Length: 383
Ligand SMILES: NC(=O)c1ccc[n+]([C@@H]2O[C@H](COP(=O)([O-])OP(=O)(O)OC[C@H]3O[C@@H](n4cnc5c(N)ncnc54)[C@H](O)[C@@H]3O)[C@@H](O)[C@H]2O)c1
Ligand SMILES: [Fe+2]
Image 1 (cartoon, helix red, strand yellow):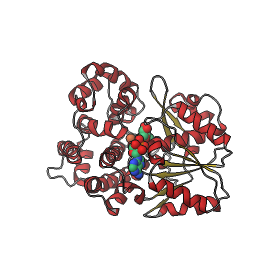
Image 2 (spheres, rainbow, N blue to C red):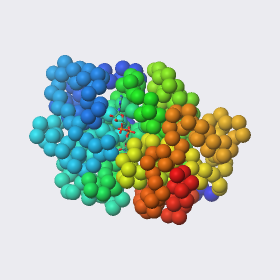
Image 3 (tube, helix red, strand yellow):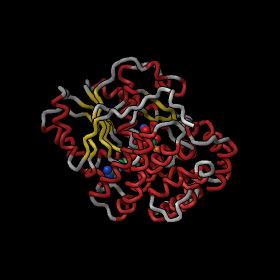
Image 4 (cartoon, helix red, strand yellow):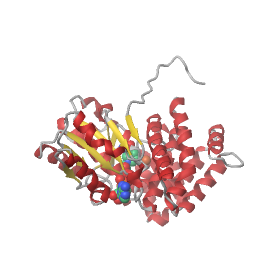
């Protein structure tokens, strides 16, 4: 029973400029806001791509001084952020533009925090109440996604790992929202099939977990259902025969997933995070493999919601089992593995994985509770 006497807060604040060619507006936007010295934060791979060079040239063409910071890890760590902060200060920057996938945008967001917040970076960890220390101004922050996956471009948090243990920590503050997002599907035209598939399944996981998460938030649920539909209809095309339409739908689906998951995530993200910590598995790939197993765990007690998902996914039979089957088949169709052993997980990893998953921040929002024993069972099933 929903308690309608409880007062809740619903936020949808980010300005998103969406569409083919939207990146062309970046130089003018900086100039219009009196900014002339951005730090472009990206990863070493994106820094070498043709479109990145074009962005740099377009900025310089407008008389903007550009500095690039790209010295980051695949699963970013604290020292990446500290180096980025030093680069910002040493070259007297006035703004931060995060260009890339979730990894680059998360580092960019954490650098934004770092500039005027000088406590130890993990003092700002949301899980220990760190957002109370986010009291100072932050530099002007812009995001430009180049994958359709994490939706970090519209997020308020940055996932950064400890250098030594690789434990993922979550830095959060509403102040860390981008002031504007330039979401341009053309930047994704050359995204390789594997990255498209893995990041796309991350976006699908966001929408599915957000729809099911236990908080009362019908607005996010509506967005999540539409996000599921967009991704279900376009991901295979984006992987195998990419065109502007499939890239655009995927970009929207990933934006929507991240908007929706302010409602919460769930068991699948908690299964996935330890794989990145322990084995450096790509975040989207880790979600993709665990997704069918985690969804199957959630069916009982939530049959009605799974019925809605099945309907949105146009599945004859229309129940939770049909959704799970579709997710297994989806991974196969996209060329992704369906078993943990295919991504290097071994039986001896399971105890540690279960410990880490149980300690993870995502599953407390799962529609039903997940015990350490449940995590162990799920990993064993998926092995
Ligand atoms: N902040 C959040 O809300 C949030 C949510 C989920 C995940 N994350 C984090 O995001 C990270 C994963 O992000 P991701 O899935 O986008 O992967 P990623 O950023 O690691 O990018 C994947 C790969 O694709 C390459 N790439 C990116 N754009 C490209 C392009 N246009 N063309 C060709 N190659 C390109 C990158 O160089 C990289 O090698 C993880 O660190 C995860 O923890 C953050
Ligand atoms: Fe994710």
